[in-house]
Image 1: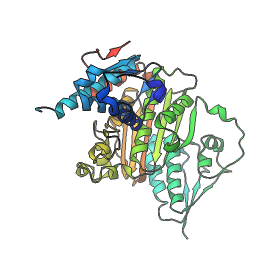
Image 2 (image 1 turned 90 degrees about the vertical axis):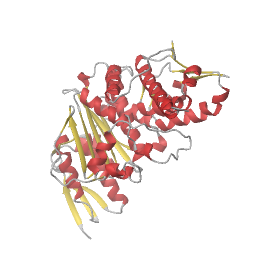
Image 3 (image 1 turned 60 degrees about the horizontal axis):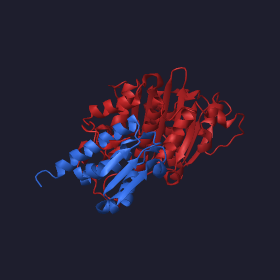
Image 4 (image 1 turned 60 degrees about the vertical axis):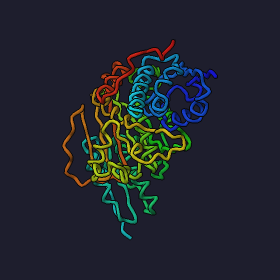
Length: 104
Length: 317
């Protein structure tokens, strides 16, 4: 299964609510994660984002799946600002994943 | 039945917040309180939401709250425009056009998150302060981010009702935004968590909340139906750094706790016996000191020890 999400259609141009980000992660992505071959999050039209949203949505996702997330997921249409937020959230999620699974 | 008149001072800027909060504290224990505005000439957004939030709490507790000195108040029009009177139950005829507010101030908003999410309310506030400004503008994005994080904290940590307002002062290129809630306060949010011992006093609780990566939500058993966490304890820390870098300030009041930092320099705690049930956060940013918001945010994240990926393979055009 190949998925693509238009983030502006899901949330509008400003992604700020951590609760909604976490809900989206759980109900739209995690529930089908094992059947996903690739997933693209298209940020075209997204002008701004908060740390609460990006960490609740993507930080949690990367923390759960680690390198598997990097293999399956792509971010598309990101402005310089959105790209910076995502890059930090993914790096932080990977750090936590590796910390949790150290020695396992 | 005990009745108290609280006469608001003529001007309340950031310096006078603690004294205002101490003054409001006098109202506790009375059955009837009159807020006298006869001397008022100017209240900052933080002062306005603090009074409105405190009055609403009293009203919920069954205290009769009224306004006095309306006829003597030189700034009645200003307070009307800020919806200060409306939120205290007074509706007077208006002699101004509501659309005048655009580009200068955001009247007091009662935040009912059930009918509007954090993103929508934060965007509405930002559009009102900077009408017609591109959402890609650096100052617009910085204010929208800060509003989003402050409102998010009020939504998830207060457990109470919140009020927000904002104002832009073009001569000084200064934006003021404030959010006040009448919830449990910061100290109580750490009660029962593994770091409760570090938040024994309201002052200690504020310092703990300002630490990067610390959120009371992260310290509690995760009851989130979706798993994962809605918070990472990053937003307030980054907002604090943005305030410093934008030549502004951050002030936080909760119970008897107080914190104020101007351009990154912490101010001496005032000696007044202030008290605020819930949490009040006031932020100022200087518009002309925000040139590259993306770079500012990235530097702020680096300051709290978070950096981006080494590889960019995950991004495509």
